[in-house]
Length: 113
Length: 115
Image (cartoon, rainbow over all chains, first blue to last red; front, side, top):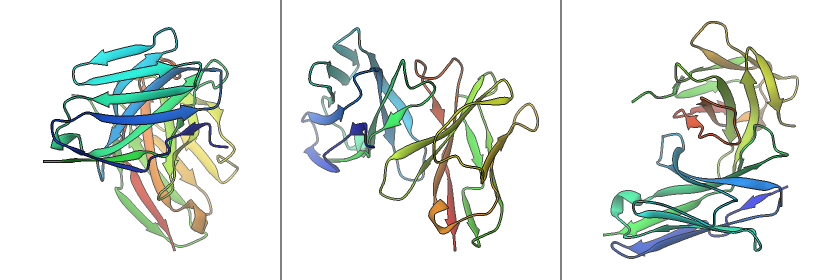
């Protein structure tokens, strides 16, 4: 039961360009979404979040866009830097999911210098 | 900056043995969680813990699993009789407020290998 999907397992981008990571979800009750970043041998680190009352949230180089009608969110990183190379997970929760975050399978981003 | 810590970083055990994975959540956090990630798969919720009791658990968290907060700082996950399919990264997390609306801080994980 894959409620949160990240269909691109990997992405390569040139340094300075935009990285766009995508995430789709199926549960219409999800109303809070987060992006986590994970380096090898480390736990996931919170990056940015968005609630369903907004369609955009921006924090420095990171912007998350939410399209509720399409059940789709994306993370934009501009400009991409080599240190952004990591695995990015989107996660979602909602009024009917209690304490659980549902994670996607992750997208491995490589930023090429 | 406060962080969640986990020990050991890697645990190797024989099938059928008991393992205890340890976590020290961030000191002023009230909610604690265990997640696992089987290699190549998604991060999966196991259990959440608040006020010294389980507040929620997933289907994965069967009778073989238990959690405990034995003192004011540690939070443990016990697997009574490990199976091969328990091999995974186990992440502990904590949050200040109730989950679902609050950022969860993750530890570095314990890699459990069951032989």
